[in-house]
Length: 418
Image 1 (tube, rainbow, N blue to C red):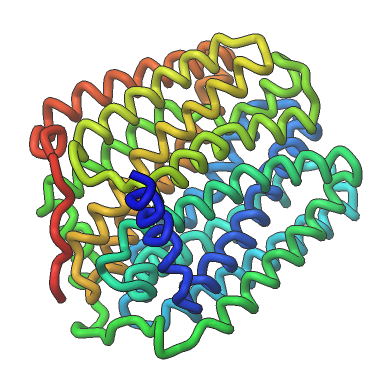
Image 2 (image 1 turned 60 degrees about the vertical axis):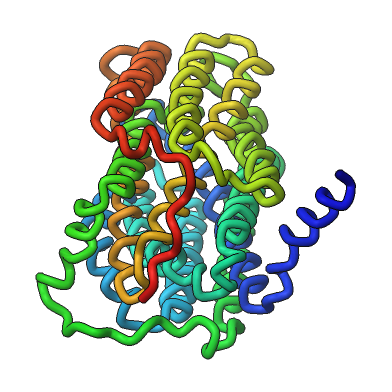
């Protein structure tokens, strides 16, 4: 038994021997830390200026609109150009966004619209970074190590979501928005420099096999639609998080319902990442290899149930626990979906397929934040969260009926050859 555990530990960390993979992980860690710190601060700053929950939703919408408009072109770019260079440029744009927010804060703006403009720029960067990042990962490690690489990559992301909001809330409490945006600027610049350091020979995108056209632009959509397992997985994630996402309303919970201030907001933002990171670390040692479909549907159902508990909670500790469970449940869906998309997609089209997956992810996150802001404006904050959690449970049942091949899936598919 001890020898088996020791072997799992060695296997989980063996992929760190690949230098470009390490640099990729560190760059993503820094960039995600910066993004999480910025999100906490922007939400608090906007609510302090306007006290309107709809504006919290517009923060998400301002990122989603450019994201959804650009993402298919971004996927095509990831299949035709150096994915490392694209990521470097995206991290540099994130630094520019932080610089703009720093200037707006120095000018003591009294309107939310300049902030929405900066977040629109960030949405453009995210549109190009997501497909390039997802399509690049399989090229950095051997095929047999890919499931563990996905888990470790997710672990790094979740660690950043744990530490980032807590640091953001703490720095916000001590030094205000200026200190946060200055820190975000430094982290984003460091991430861009790290991506430049990745060796070109390890991460060059596959050569383009088709000239750019409307036909090739939409080929990712057609590919996803032709794969019921992939389509079911990413659409389940879309609608579950679209209805169940309550993170956009956390500033209201921190300020008005739980009354814990910006430091408490940082902890609330951190809690989902705590649960997700712990589960991602467990997956790095014990990847899901059997009962894949039930694992995914069970995770989405737990996500909805945890959302309901958070919605009705008026106790800070219970709210933190509910958010941690929510994050762990979401990690299951993220892990399975990412594996399905990458394993069933050949490299020459992986950028475009990853772009389609990113559309679903972006819709579930940013558009979900906008949906939460609107429903909170209509029905009130608590009722909006409760309805969202219930809707997630309904979606889980419907998808189990409409996509039986995904619901009954036992083992992961074998990697598709190029």
